[in-house]
Image (cartoon, rainbow, N blue to C red; front, side):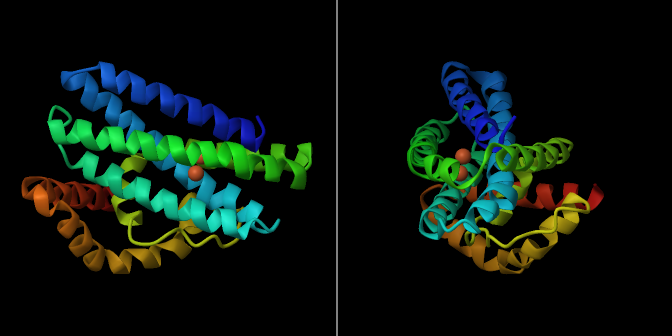
Length: 217
Ligand SMILES: [Fe+2]
Ligand SMILES: [Fe+2]
């Protein structure tokens, strides 16, 4: 599957999951939301680690700057949703906002970025890029990628060319500097959560659980 086909398939899967979450309730809703959070985490990662850097080399900087900023906005909203009980009214309200942000972002990728990429890359290049993305996706699917999302909400992912060899952790390593900014980020998120303090605590616990799982992995 070439790179654009892969991303478009995931865009449709995400859309489908939003619809299923909205019509689900109870534990089923929480489970479907976890699937959505993992799927969005993987999708953003393979775009940021492979697709956007490859495309950046082909002079689409302005579009990509906008895209990575939108990714951060989506990750912030996703992180807050992860900290809320999926049965709460606040969760449903934020889930609706998240869905709108994701749909807006997907529309821009589909209408502005992908057509440009199709003119800059040939079929073989898109196929090769799709294979790299598929292999990173398979590695990320081994874990729970949603727990990495709160750590990626301070600043947009730097779109550096990453080595294509080596394990996923060696490729992600250059981006771990963002972890150092975590305390600042927590203050920012705590401010955002000012209206819902209980969720702030839940969020902190979620981040702690995520870090613990990473250490144990
Ligand atoms: Fe994207
Ligand atoms: Fe996308």
